[in-house]
Structure formats: structure tokens, C-alpha cells
Length: 162
Image (tube, rainbow, N blue to C red; front, side):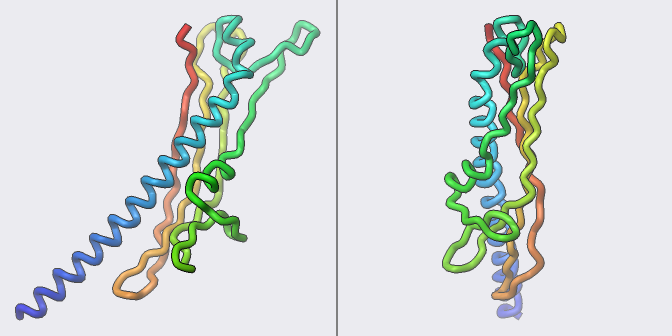
């Protein structure tokens, strides 16, 4: 009876440890994505200048004929994630390899920039939203189970202070 209880507790500990591993990976990838989206917003800061001068935070520039054209740059989020997390490009996305095995896969990147309307009368800020699909293989007692799939959402907002 004691042996059965010890085995059940050991299996429970293994399940909790695997859950913690997946949670730590998801948090690390989300923080790296947050860093990449902040960098994307910062990269667009120079394009926001003209609109801030006119009183609104938005990515616009004068085209020389009295009109304004939208100026936004989605940045290189995959490149920044790859550099930060040490990812390798694979057919199904970017993968993190550890000891020859896939630790996780990132795919399905979506970058959406929300620009304020010029002369909108209100400055809601300049927002960059990133969504990525994260797939983490789940292992339990030496067996490979179906992967944990999740979509991570993060955003950054630029609002001028002055």
C-alpha cells in the first residue's frame, strides 16, 4: 500500500513538473514577444513625429502636396524572437531545439498595427498587437503525449506625453 501511494505521488509530482515546464516556456516566449512588439512600436516612433507635431500620435507623413500618407512598419518580430530565444527556422515555423529534440515551436505570427486617424481629434495612441501560436510537446513518464497548443497575445501602445 505504501509503495502504491509513493508511486501515485511520484506520478503526481511528474505531472506538476511537466505543467511547470510548459508554463515557464509560455511565459518566456510571451515576454520575448512583448519585447519584440515594444521594439516594433519604438521602430515606428520616428514616423510618429509629424503627427505628434500636429497634436495626434499616429504614423503619418506629409507627401508634399498638402496630403498626409500613412507610414507604418510591422518590423521583424520573427527575427527578434529568433535572436532572443535562439530559434531555428523549420518548415512548420521556428523551433527551439534542446539536446536534439524539439522543445517548442512558434508559428502563425500576426502583427497588427493600429494607427490613429489623422485629425481625429483624440489621441488613442499608436498600438502594435502581436499574436503567435506556441506548440510545446508534452512528455509524461517517458511517453510523448499530444502537444500543448496555445495562442499568445501581447500588445504595446505608444502615447506621447507632451
